[in-house]
Length: 310
Image (cartoon, rainbow, N blue to C red; front, top):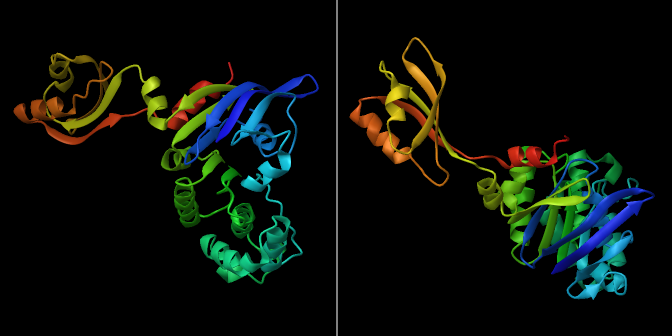
């Protein structure tokens, strides 16, 4: 478990992180989000013992990172935004080098090397120099160095940066599997990736935590009313008839063309799902429903609401 309490980091007069507190449990994948300069990377660097805080505490499994820095570093796998790679080394030599740095038993070298090459999809480039690799493969090597010593905690800053869509899905599934046993903090600007991967989301802005919860909790917390998008074919005045349904508060006509196709937004009270009633009402009136969906505020919308400048 990671416990961050009243963490503050200053650079001169600038507070990069301002009195931040949160916890991450074992077996939890935390999406750590924020705009550029919000304090994400600084927070992760403090947690990984890369830099000291100005004030506040961080504990890993009950151990303070200042008093037990070396022990804690052994428990952590860290992939910074720019992976720490040596372009003149080939992939296998580099991973052997990392195994040595991480003090993995030499009897396990071959086993861990084989496992991590398969997990990260590096089989086709093992004897190439890192400097010859594409950005996507370099990112995979960065992931490999973070995971090769089987750490209890993974802290990943933009882990899918430079990967193609197929590789992104593979790494996303890998992170979800790792999260069943490990503590994972994932920072990314790809918000659908967070929705698909993370159990919980933490949003930081200007050094302060502005939201904390599951994606579903954040979405429900920012929805004032339920909205249903309806595309329907009829010659009738559909909007006025729909307004007569008891739970309907507002009907907004988005468009109405010459083919009698009408596009509408229907609003009702929060927590009320009118789709079944609208369907039955349409059948009674012999309207043809072309599309109907309940609109949900996306994580991207919430992120923008919380982090856009005044």
